Amino acid sequence: MKFLGKRKPEGAPGLAASPTTRERGNAAEDQALAHLQAAGLQLVVRNYRTPGRGGGEIDLVMRERDGTLVFVEVRSRAGSAFGGAGASISATKQQRIIFAARHYLLRLPSPPPCRFDVVLVEASLQWLKAAFDAQ
Image 1: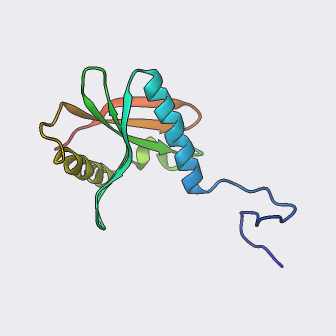
Image 2 (image 1 turned 180 degrees about the vertical axis):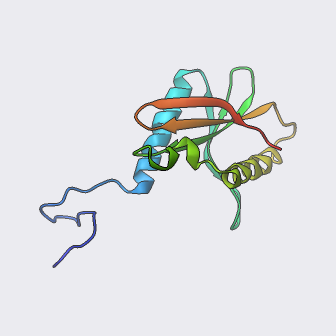
């Protein structure tokens, strides 16, 4: 049996299995979550998605000690080509995150103060507080 892909089939000798994009993303989210929790934030929801197609997703919804709800986008890149992880958060991506945050807030009886943070996971971890605003 000939194997042309990058991932090693079960029991196949030779090629080492490389993590999938999803696995790398989950690992970056785990790292970001641990960092934010060590800074005193509390996890509220992980991977909040709006129903239906074309909606948005929020990687982490966290709560600060003062009650502020923090919507966190985690971005990871193996290299800095094309501007790295930070450059991958386009205006369209920001609008989808804002859409999902508004959808999340509609479920609450009284929305608390909120902000949008970004955690970049590259060679090191960088936490950008209030990285963008809802317009």
